[in-house]
Image (tube, rainbow, N blue to C red; front, top):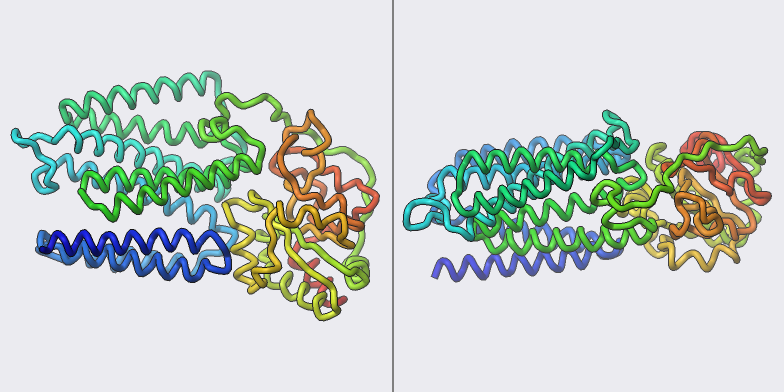
Length: 462
């Protein structure tokens, strides 16, 4: 009877997680999706804690208090600019949890209910443990490297060396062989070896990935953490963990595929650190062509005499924490009867949905925020397009120059707007390392300043 109630509770929790993911697909329903996710997690954890095999709650409550305290402290202090590395850090914890659960199951298979007749480990359980530990170790070390890159502790540029791909291939083969042998004999020493090699390859897979591809890395690490959780769910015979892990793993993989298409990247190339990628990655130095610069007064005059304005946010907006003053500026334009919308590129920022989160934090109406496919046809009829901190995602070279490293990448067609305002500290290139042709266009006015200060000044002029 108890097992049936547990199964029903886990089923309800899984349904909540599915509804949660569905809600998170749209900014307008994201709050409702979060609520369903919270309800599902409370139901799943509560059901697990009511299991009669638990005889003491001291360690559990200690972990809850410690983890909850640390989580609350981080949530209250974290800046939006640091959100990508925070997500990477969370992924690393999921990966390490998978490794530790597998190690605990290996040390006491009887307690975990995975022992065979000889008090060894069942073949199926050994396979699940090795998979969960390997994926978890790769997730942990890969996420740590991603965190270091995003935090600026490690260079955000690709770190490559001779024979890198062959080394990764060799280590991958070693992991597969070790998993097969471990599944047959459950040797603890082999488990340690398998885990250590997985830690190493996780690091080697991420270090050659540059900052421009970090959004894809974040979503893929999210997928890895899900599959690691699902593998451990099999070891623990926990259906809720299996379903939740599979949902996270599959949704992360789908999101990664969507993003590499938006970047015109090879999925295999990004995930395997450039394996099989093309050679068009040479950094192009910016030229000394003249540009037309302006002031906040010029920008305010152009926008208040426009019929429509499209705002293109980028990572520079996040760095300057300018989302709130930007929303205030947009409201002043609306008060003057000007149509204002926001154009979002799928890979703007450092993680999936980065710009959407920033604008939502500033209470920008969801209906004003449009994705690339929705907004691109409207640029030709737009009087003013103002870019705040974006670069490669607006570069028309992606459409016109076959020799450009970003050729073929879908970009926002802001060059078709009547007037372009570009808020940027300097003419420095973006992650792709190439000049943006828009800087030198006749209809472009560069606004050289910190994004927050410039937007504030424009707002004052309005």
